[in-house]
Image 1: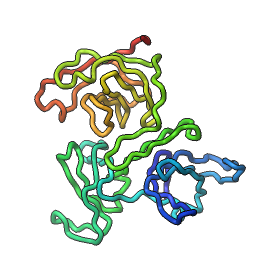
Image 2: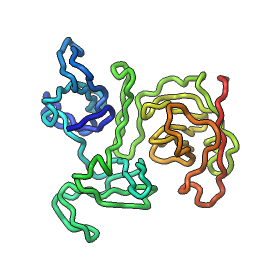
Image 3: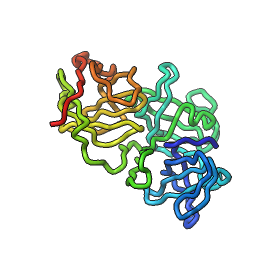
Amino acid sequence: MSVAVGDPVSVLSRSSGTWHRDGVIVKILVEATTVEGEQPMPAGAVKVIYDGTKSAKWVPPEAFGEEIREADFQIGDGVSVFVRSKGLWISDGFVEQVLEEAATVDEVSMPAGAIKVIYQNKEYAKWIPPELFGDEVKVLRSYVPENVDELVYSVPSALGAEKPAAAAADEDDAYIVSKVAGAARAVGGRYVRAGVHNERPKYKNGSGGIIFFDFWWKMNVKDDILQWCYEVKTATGEELPCGTWNCTRFYNKSGSHPPVEVKKTPPA
């Protein structure tokens, strides 16, 4: 079982003997050390949070499979779906069906455990067999890698939002979005740093609009990371890009939404 920080996992609670599906890996030890309570742990051990973020524990590599396992899927789970034709992950998917036994679906043979996912504004669907889980579909989970021991977590449920408990807005890290027109006008105005998502700052304006990072920098009219209306697909760096942001093809079907401009601004 290969692991990385942020991976969704199912976690066994020894006290109750039940598996929790909402686990997230938040730390991986590079070298052997002692952890909380002077507990020795080998290199490769992972720290997981689970049970609605109320519980956490360390799991050594030899217990992988017995105490943590790769996340499974249930109907309604929010997922990211890999679109081969575009070479991109689309983060607005959800599981519509799970096969309990092997069957022929849409003229294709699928094994037990295969899932049907709906994605890209509910316009597309496809079946994915278990052997492609991880390569073509991932459960949506949220995490914050920094200060993991001090932060309060909130793991999303199916189609839910995200986030640890929001930190106070950072007025010194601010941007202005201008030249906004039409139904997308809620994205305009001053944005300040209001949290973290995918190891990048997340920004929010007074109208509820957000700017966030999910494979590239994106902007939405509301606090919903599963959709977005403006983007800079070439921007994958640490800092929010300034300059021109284009409206997405799906949001701009009418052609009435011109690009917007983003610039860094001093604090108010």
